[in-house]
Length: 304
Image 1 (tube, one colour):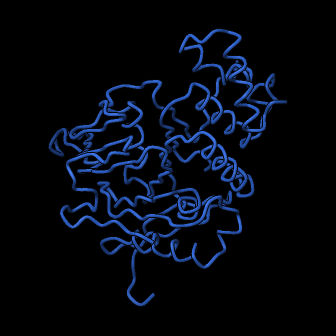
Image 2: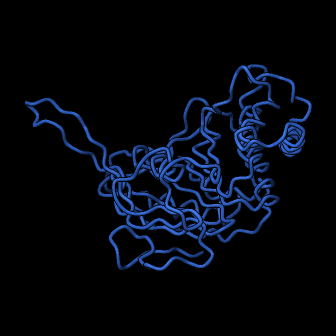
């Protein structure tokens, strides 16, 4: 087990100004502040610091998860990498190019699937290929190949409303992979599915990742999910989000579901949970009514 704590900065991230040779994503001094409108009585407009001085290298082909309590800026960081939100300060580069707008170099998968209801499963997967102006026959074949990879070949002519939540998410994964992005960004993609389906999607996602070698940046509220999937887990502090610590997950691959009940897994789970304690607050993993989990800050009482 390796924990990376940076002694030279307050946020526990990499201090090296140089970018690692195998880094596909390089983030340096990244900050984001939102303008917040207030009444004149309250002093007028002000700003809210969402992310503060994020420094991080993400290796080519790495599976990296980001965890932290609600409101710490996990999704915001992902959207900056996707080019959907503009940073206030610092730098975010993919393959040496500064991210300033969405490109086909990155694919993003969100919790809400974002499938086009008027398109069949096949046509949804072909969408990015159409933007790249791939020929009709070629994009049909590529889409068919990725639908087979996610186990949905027989549903190619169906529409999204005819699919379960887990199936919709697999379509979203196939669509993101079909146009061959270098980096796959995933924002709590399995939060809306039941626990059994989530476990199946974990194993399928890892299988796809091993086959394709994509770089994956995965945002989650679940400690268990982050450990099971990842090469490294990055822990963010409560708002403003700073990199508190980075943990290397030294567990064997492939990772069967029963690994989650092992002693080695329990050690990592406890370590991540302890790191999520901060400034008189305790971050708990709360079991929700739908079987999913959420990290929430609760008062810390000495002796409990």
